[in-house]
Structure formats: C-alpha cells, structure tokens
Length: 223
Image 1 (spheres, rainbow, N blue to C red):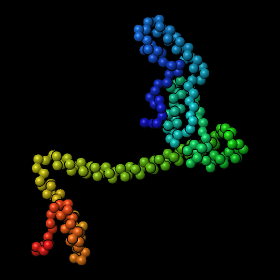
Image 2 (cartoon, one colour):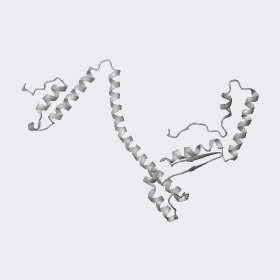
Image 3 (cartoon, rainbow, N blue to C red):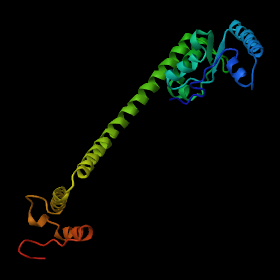
Image 4 (spheres, one colour):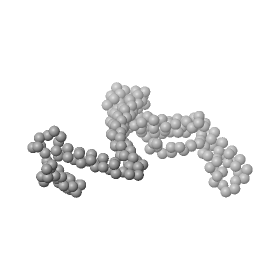
C-alpha cells in the first residue's frame, strides 16, 4: 500500500472507449464503431506526442514510490516520460542532501532560483533517499523487536486460555496458579533465605487482605 493516488487505475492513452460505450443505454453497432474510430484517433495522437508525461513535485523518501509513479507513464509498453521538480526546501533535501547539493551549486556557479539539472544532483538525491530508507529500516527493526516481546506475551496468555477451555475441570490448574501467586507474593515481602529484619510482614498482611481477602499468620498462630 502507498499514499499515492490512483493506485490500481488503468491509465489508457486517449481514454477508454469501453467506458464511452457503457455510458450509452443501448448503443448500436454503428455507434460503437464510431466511438472506437474516434478513440483510435485520440490514442494515436497521444502516442505521437510521446505518451503520458508524469510530473513529480518532490521526491519521496522511498525510491520505490518514485518508481511506481514513473511506472504510470509506461502502461503495457506504451511510450511515456517523467520529470521531477525539487526544491532545496523539500524535507528530503533539507535534512539529508542540503549541504552536498549546496556545495555543488557553488562549484557550478548556480544562482538562487536557477534550475539545476546535473547527474551529480541526481546522485546526491539517490544517496539521500538511501539514507532515509536505511533510517526507516532501523526504526521498523527496533519496533519489531518490541513487538516480538508483546507477541510472546500474547502467545503465552492465549496458550494458557486455550488449555483452560479444553478441559472440563479446571480446579487443578486454578489451584496451581493460586499457589504460584501466593508464593510470588510472599517471596516479594519475605525474600527467601533472608534475615527476619528484612521481612515486611505488615506489607504482606495489607497486600493479602486487600487483594485476596486472606489474613496471613505466622507459624505458631502469631498475628
């Protein structure tokens, strides 16, 4: 998918005679023949003029988008051409190619407002696009790494959910989960192999009473 208008549109040189025929309620053979003849004249005139000419007002960050736009002018072997007009104030030029192109302008003795058309400029633009594509690739790669973590979590949760749905008696699973939760909670307030001075008995009481409705007592009945 791209943000380019007209994607999937069949641009026929001279228009579409089928569309003209479809617009008529009951076209006769003579009408269809005349429409085809008129279309052929228009089609030949467009071919003689060089076909479809694409005008781009900027260069996209992705060369793939520019190439797709150029491809509009080459439908099924039809002739065509394309030309891009850029400004040094375009985002792509300003961020990634302004210094290099400005240096070229000075070397060539170009004046402000004067059109530039040189292979060096084309190469500088291509290099700028490669930089942007590389940066965007790194961004997508980092996002994928974060998404992989979330995806692993989703997979674990859905696996556990499916296991619960596939059995008729979930009491053993629930008891196991409950034991794990209580153990993890107790370990958080009373770390294993820790000194008694490090225990947070009050915090454990509050936590279990608030979230579980359970009063935890010390061994021996002490509150």
